[in-house]
Image (cartoon, rainbow, N blue to C red; front, side, top):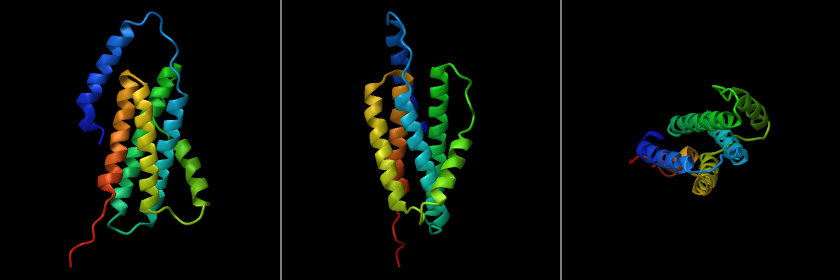
Amino acid sequence: MLIGAGRGIAAVALLGQTVSACASSPTPPAVEDLKAQLELAERDSQTARDAAAAANPVAAPALAEVASERSEHARALAEEIARAAGEPVQTTTETATTTTTTTSAQAGPPPSVRDVINALRESADSATALAAELSGYRAGLLGSIAASCTASYQVALVFREPAP
Protein backbone atom coordinates (compact mmCIF):
# COMPACT_ATOMS: atom_id res chain seq x y z
CA MET A 1 0.00 0.00 0.00
CA LEU A 2 3.06 2.23 0.21
CA ILE A 3 3.52 2.25 -3.57
CA GLY A 4 0.48 4.42 -4.38
CA ALA A 5 1.87 7.31 -2.40
CA GLY A 6 5.26 7.14 -4.15
CA ARG A 7 4.96 10.40 -6.07
CA GLY A 8 3.78 12.30 -3.02
CA ILE A 9 6.59 10.88 -0.92
CA ALA A 10 9.14 11.81 -3.57
CA ALA A 11 7.80 15.36 -3.73
CA VAL A 12 7.79 15.71 0.04
CA ALA A 13 11.32 14.26 0.26
CA LEU A 14 12.57 16.65 -2.42
CA LEU A 15 10.97 19.60 -0.64
CA GLY A 16 12.53 18.46 2.64
CA GLN A 17 15.97 18.26 1.03
CA THR A 18 15.56 21.72 -0.44
CA VAL A 19 14.49 23.21 2.88
CA SER A 20 17.21 21.40 4.83
CA ALA A 21 19.87 22.64 2.40
CA CYS A 22 18.94 26.20 3.40
CA ALA A 23 19.29 25.54 7.13
CA SER A 24 22.23 27.21 8.83
CA SER A 25 23.32 24.41 11.13
CA PRO A 26 22.12 20.84 11.22
CA THR A 27 20.69 19.60 14.50
CA PRO A 28 20.73 15.98 15.53
CA PRO A 29 17.46 14.36 14.54
CA ALA A 30 15.13 13.37 17.37
CA VAL A 31 14.01 9.77 17.10
CA GLU A 32 11.88 9.22 20.20
CA ASP A 33 8.67 9.83 18.27
CA LEU A 34 9.83 7.39 15.60
CA LYS A 35 10.52 4.80 18.29
CA ALA A 36 6.91 5.15 19.45
CA GLN A 37 5.76 4.59 15.85
CA LEU A 38 8.02 1.54 15.64
CA GLU A 39 6.41 0.10 18.78
CA LEU A 40 2.94 0.68 17.31
CA ALA A 41 3.93 -1.05 14.06
CA GLU A 42 5.33 -4.04 15.93
CA ARG A 43 2.25 -4.21 18.15
CA ASP A 44 -0.12 -4.02 15.19
CA SER A 45 1.80 -6.67 13.27
CA GLN A 46 1.64 -9.07 16.17
CA THR A 47 -2.03 -8.31 16.88
CA ALA A 48 -2.94 -8.97 13.24
CA ARG A 49 -0.83 -12.14 13.19
CA ASP A 50 -2.54 -13.44 16.35
CA ALA A 51 -5.97 -12.54 14.97
CA ALA A 52 -5.19 -14.28 11.65
CA ALA A 53 -4.26 -17.49 13.45
CA ALA A 54 -7.72 -17.62 15.05
CA ALA A 55 -9.76 -16.03 12.24
CA ASN A 56 -12.15 -17.65 9.81
CA PRO A 57 -10.85 -18.53 6.32
CA VAL A 58 -12.30 -15.33 4.85
CA ALA A 59 -10.59 -12.93 7.25
CA ALA A 60 -7.29 -14.77 7.85
CA PRO A 61 -5.57 -13.81 4.55
CA ALA A 62 -6.41 -10.11 4.97
CA LEU A 63 -5.18 -10.15 8.56
CA ALA A 64 -1.96 -11.88 7.48
CA GLU A 65 -1.42 -9.18 4.85
CA VAL A 66 -1.97 -6.45 7.44
CA ALA A 67 0.59 -8.17 9.70
CA SER A 68 3.07 -8.25 6.83
CA GLU A 69 2.53 -4.59 5.94
CA ARG A 70 2.93 -3.47 9.55
CA SER A 71 6.14 -5.53 9.76
CA GLU A 72 7.40 -3.64 6.71
CA HIS A 73 6.49 -0.37 8.41
CA ALA A 74 8.45 -1.48 11.48
CA ARG A 75 11.44 -2.32 9.28
CA ALA A 76 11.35 1.07 7.55
CA LEU A 77 11.05 2.89 10.87
CA ALA A 78 13.89 0.86 12.41
CA GLU A 79 16.09 1.72 9.42
CA GLU A 80 15.32 5.43 9.76
CA ILE A 81 16.00 5.35 13.50
CA ALA A 82 19.34 3.59 12.93
CA ARG A 83 20.25 5.99 10.12
CA ALA A 84 19.47 9.01 12.28
CA ALA A 85 21.54 7.59 15.13
CA GLY A 86 24.44 6.86 12.78
CA GLU A 87 24.18 3.14 13.54
CA PRO A 88 24.32 0.20 11.15
CA VAL A 89 20.91 -0.62 9.74
CA GLN A 90 19.43 -3.91 10.93
CA THR A 91 17.48 -5.79 8.30
CA THR A 92 14.86 -7.42 10.54
CA THR A 93 12.79 -6.69 13.60
CA GLU A 94 12.53 -10.38 14.43
CA THR A 95 13.75 -10.02 18.03
CA ALA A 96 11.06 -7.51 18.95
CA THR A 97 8.38 -9.59 17.22
CA THR A 98 9.47 -12.74 19.04
CA THR A 99 9.33 -10.97 22.39
CA THR A 100 5.87 -9.63 21.62
CA THR A 101 4.70 -13.10 20.56
CA THR A 102 5.56 -14.55 23.94
CA THR A 103 3.77 -11.74 25.75
CA SER A 104 0.64 -11.80 23.60
CA ALA A 105 0.31 -15.60 23.78
CA GLN A 106 -0.13 -15.34 27.54
CA ALA A 107 -2.66 -12.50 27.42
CA GLY A 108 -5.80 -14.61 26.89
CA PRO A 109 -8.10 -15.03 23.94
CA PRO A 110 -6.79 -14.03 20.51
CA PRO A 111 -7.59 -10.57 19.23
CA SER A 112 -10.53 -10.09 16.92
CA VAL A 113 -10.73 -8.27 13.60
CA ARG A 114 -12.29 -5.38 15.56
CA ASP A 115 -9.21 -5.29 17.84
CA VAL A 116 -6.95 -5.05 14.78
CA ILE A 117 -9.11 -2.30 13.27
CA ASN A 118 -8.99 -0.31 16.51
CA ALA A 119 -5.19 -0.68 16.73
CA LEU A 120 -4.76 0.39 13.10
CA ARG A 121 -7.02 3.40 13.62
CA GLU A 122 -4.90 4.49 16.61
CA SER A 123 -1.69 3.99 14.62
CA ALA A 124 -3.02 5.91 11.61
CA ASP A 125 -4.06 8.84 13.81
CA SER A 126 -0.70 8.87 15.58
CA ALA A 127 1.30 8.70 12.34
CA THR A 128 -0.86 11.43 10.77
CA ALA A 129 -0.30 13.78 13.71
CA LEU A 130 3.46 13.18 13.72
CA ALA A 131 3.77 13.53 9.93
CA ALA A 132 2.25 17.01 10.21
CA GLU A 133 5.06 18.01 12.60
CA LEU A 134 7.89 16.72 10.43
CA SER A 135 9.31 17.40 7.01
CA GLY A 136 11.16 15.59 4.28
CA TYR A 137 11.52 11.85 4.17
CA ARG A 138 10.15 11.31 7.67
CA ALA A 139 6.95 13.20 6.92
CA GLY A 140 6.51 11.16 3.76
CA LEU A 141 7.25 7.89 5.54
CA LEU A 142 4.74 8.60 8.29
CA GLY A 143 2.14 9.89 5.82
CA SER A 144 2.51 6.69 3.83
CA ILE A 145 2.21 4.57 6.98
CA ALA A 146 -0.92 6.48 8.02
CA ALA A 147 -2.46 5.96 4.58
CA SER A 148 -1.66 2.26 4.64
CA CYS A 149 -3.17 1.78 8.10
CA THR A 150 -6.28 3.70 7.07
CA ALA A 151 -6.72 1.66 3.88
CA SER A 152 -6.29 -1.53 5.89
CA TYR A 153 -8.99 -0.77 8.41
CA GLN A 154 -11.38 0.94 5.98
CA VAL A 155 -11.01 -1.43 3.03
CA ALA A 156 -8.97 -4.60 3.58
CA LEU A 157 -10.62 -5.57 6.86
CA VAL A 158 -14.21 -4.86 5.82
CA PHE A 159 -15.93 -8.16 5.10
CA ARG A 160 -19.35 -8.64 3.61
CA GLU A 161 -21.47 -11.70 4.04
CA PRO A 162 -21.83 -13.63 0.78
CA ALA A 163 -25.22 -13.33 -0.88
CA PRO A 164 -27.46 -16.40 -0.43
